[in-house]
Image (cartoon, rainbow, N blue to C red; front, side, top):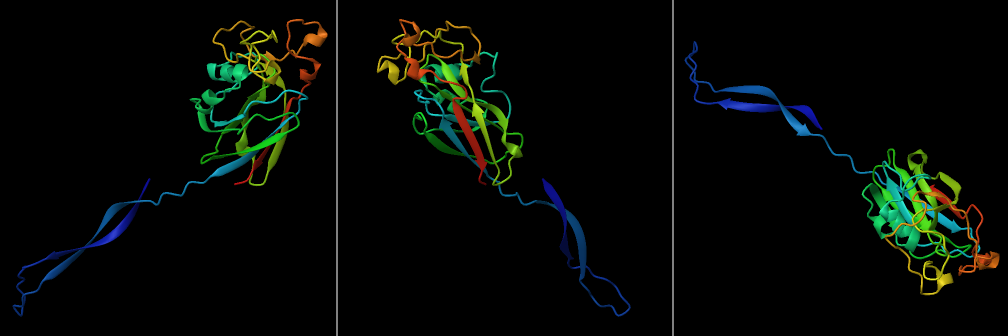
Length: 245
């Protein structure tokens, strides 16, 4: 953007001989005003910073490192929708690296480590332009095949500095891997070091839905490596957002 500013410009016309009644030579200085375009000062960027605290509400389901994303448009997930490859990788194996580099994201931060049952983690995220920005976050329930919890596309621009907002999140099924609960298919501690995690093959419903829950070997699913302790009720996650800047 530019603004117009008038600047005085002196143009000296030299060696002009003027004949007067006295015959004097005089130098005439001609003053002009011209309009010159001067760039307007660029305003300094304004930061909008948020603290996002995630609490694990389950009994025996660690949450994978949380992916926190600020974005303008689109959705990280939606019930009835098809899971993206990045969401599938997170929901099956707890790997959020694809979501950290998601093409629609304006800013992203990852949790430092899995969040154990009853524990919390606070993650700070900052963005320069918050107009119409949405907050999404997701995390895998690691003692499942492709279960995850999170928040999709909540508009953070409504928060003033010092404001906070709290919500509870349910558990969703990515629809990409059958809920067999079998050995070698669950990446969490219930399967030791044998869990396979992400697999490119999709052999479930094909769409995101509310998670039906864990069956477990205690309830006669003989091939399950899970027990009643791994069952969960909704909600499975609490989310608190505070705008600090």
